[in-house]
Amino acid sequence: MAKKRMVLEIGMGTDIRGTDPTKAAARALRDALWHNSLSIATALGQPLEAMQVDVHIGVPKPELVDKAEVLKVLPYGRGTVTVVEGGLQIMNDEGTDGTMIANCCAIVSLDI
Image (cartoon, rainbow, N blue to C red):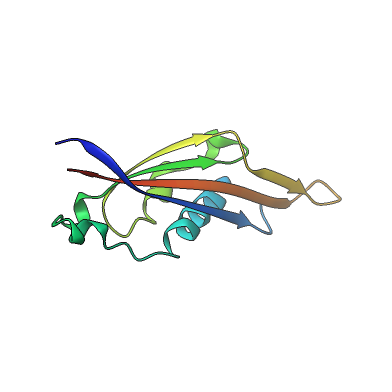
């Protein structure tokens, strides 16, 4: 069997009144996943838990993202998280707070 890409999902998440990259990253993954109802696994006779989800996050301050917290968003399947520099941070006029924007790509694969 070989790992085959089945789905590519894209999302964006924000922490509007804060600069928490984990919160923005989790919301980006949620945005990517919550607009779909994937039946690909069951259509191929696979259990939902067989889905392998490779999550790629682009966010300012990638070293601050709690990957385990982001993975809690997955409703099923096994996941990995890779975080790179990206997204956007917009500070308020005082420079004391701001908005964090994260981008996400979730690649869903099956071993078939």
